[in-house]
Length: 268
Image 1: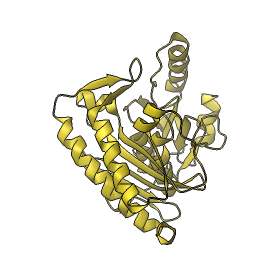
Image 2 (image 1 turned 45 degrees about the vertical axis):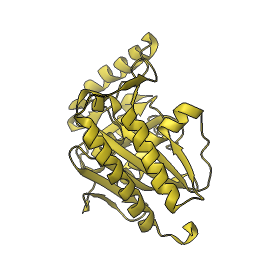
Image 3 (image 1 turned 90 degrees about the vertical axis):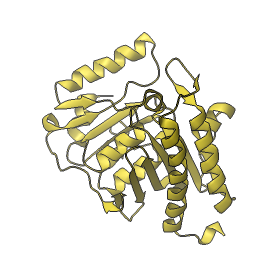
């Protein structure tokens, strides 16, 4: 069955799953949360787990032969290898710390890779009701309206987004703050919103000119957003300037006009 399904049908199925999970997130957003710690500052809630179960059950019902990689199942059972098979990669609640604190920058992220290439992407923020979608070769959209990256061509006038990550050892924190300090002299300002997927979508719709992050959770943070940035006319790449590797826990995104200047300053 799945072999004859169009990319548009894959997208519609993913959107339906994201909307269903979004309802759970929206209801849980205003309630007291039961929190577990995956690390010093890396949190997981009952909502994360419930949303992942819902999304996977929905997708498996439609595409039982496909592969599946999720943040919470990977955390529970160990590393899952990405193959050339059609693979759904899901972050059921990106921005869990924001969710816990009632900061409305949270989302569901669903990506489909085919031949290890991000091909369909859905990122949905149910709190402010923003749905980002993209299909490889067919454009990117916010709430069904076409979006594109910014046309900013000066690094000094660019808005940069990044994150400090979940590691708090002194070596990592010092390296992170050193990079941010260096970049602050070269860009207009810096934002840390707490969601890798939504930062990518911010680049895609032109709200953010540049985004980079290292040491994030895994491919579920970027699988959906990478498609959306690319289809909005942006570039997704390794922060060193080399090709993007979805399994590397390293990502950068920008419009095409400022990539080289950014990479030269970052020197990562």
